[in-house]
Image (tube, rainbow, N blue to C red; front, side, top):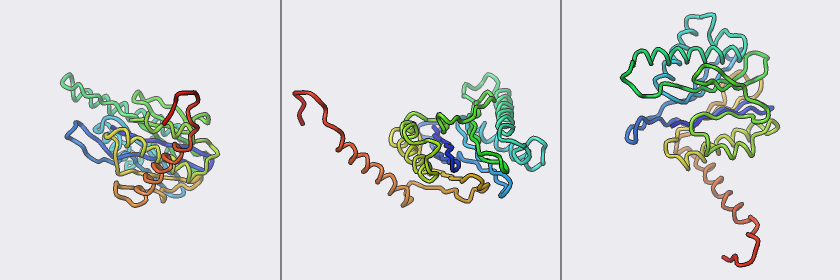
Length: 247
């Protein structure tokens, strides 16, 4: 399983992902699900991936090949993030179709993959897109300025409560980490290392990217502080009303 999220606030963008991948209960591996395409000072594109690992890797190879060959349609040359999201959707569909033809009727494995693509090109506004397995995409809306893929339900409540356009960028980064921690507490198929990238508007660089493994001191202190904070808040909640209720 996978959990990735991206959030957009007035000050910039946040991307976060886990790294656990498994094909069975006893077949667990670690693969990076955050992929950064960076041309410092010109453009920064970040892709988060969920779904079939072979499809994801095929998509990555195709994207890199188009960049290396200086193709007219590539993440290095497309003029807008909308165009880049549409291009990514087309590449994904092509890779899925090629895998399905190769497998024929022999495989019942789902070959689909879902992606988040975000970043900034030049002086255009930053943006985040959700690219579906069918190749179409949507753009993050101000009413819900975040997108999740993979195992989304456990980490969504904190995002619903906290992520809003006016939230300071560093607080949005903290919120993303807490969302990942909440998911890991409830689903063992999501796990570290955690990749985090906090990008200020106009930064056009992935200099702030950070990877936190399970024993990282900051990651451990954050998880502990969040858990202890929840305990303190719980103890201050109003008592249940009505007669007959006692400790």
